[in-house]
Amino acid sequence: MIINFLFQKLNSVQFREFSKNVTCSSLLVLLVSLSLHAAEQVHIDNATTIDSVTENSKVIPSKVNYSEISNTVSEANSNALLLNTQDDLRIIALAPHIVEMLFELGLGDYIVGTVEYADYPEQANSIERVGGYYGMQIEKILALAPDIIFAWQSGNKVDDLAQLRRLNMNVVSSKPDKIDDVATELRYFSKVTHDIVDAKENISTDIKKLFLAKLAQHTNTVSDNFESKLAFIREKYQDKESVDVFYQLWPKPMRTVNKNTWIHQVIEICRGRNVFADNSTDYPQISIENVLVAQPHIIILPDEKSETPQPTIQWQQWPEIPAVTANAYIGVNADLLHRFSPRMLSGVEQLCADMEAYR
Image (cartoon, rainbow, N blue to C red; front, side, top):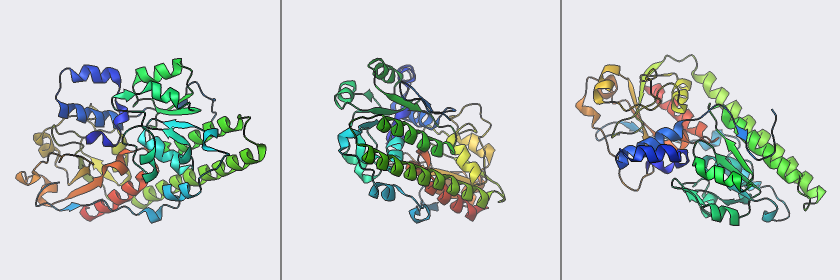
């Protein structure tokens, strides 16, 4: 379903107000819209302070090439960091992308609780669930006695996070705004974990030193590789001729993205020109007529994991659109492009390569 990749963006106040007047499908679209929105910085609360497409159309499927990313989730997990026991460090991760990042850092074995739709890597599916888009199960979280809770401030419900803080839970909140912030998040999560482990008196000095040294090594490798890979992709496409792109975020009601969004940044890296960049709303609802006026040369269609078929738009009915005439439809993996994690670069790289066919 549409909330699959980032349900955690739902704000409880927005949910209550919105749900009074809209249909279920519109609500699901709002969840996507909220999930792609982010703020400017990562910050920590109650924790150690850190310095610092359609039928008969040509749809190109997303082809992920993990081999080009030198430190993947599986590699990080194969070098999982070891303490005396898993009880020496207990982490709760309240967003799918946070789970992915912790596995990248070699900390996956210490996640004792997470949320629905945290499904990558495969090991994440065995972690106990403590909440979902509907909110957090506070009693269950307390029973797990976490050393730290990594939360998605603009995704988890405000009331839930406030209650956890009132209960003196060690809540660390983060809100990446730019693609580059993925590396920043990795370093912050690592620094917070470092400080917590370093302060523990029940872990021997030798084991602690080895753990922290390996954590630092993992952090440098994963974050540096992400930055290097991102710089490589940007340089590869920076001089390409731009092409007009329409990103069909959701079909019915039809929604897209403007220049304030994470997806817009991805389109720009691939030298696409988002035809709805100047819309006043971050995730505007649009019509076929709007697309006809915009005249995109490429239509990008994110492929959601869903228990029921997504509605489709038969774009062939409007040959006046250049993308329709050229059958220029590109299918993308929503989990890769919409989650704030290192593996999103595989999605970016494939999108850029697919767009090359239509310049």
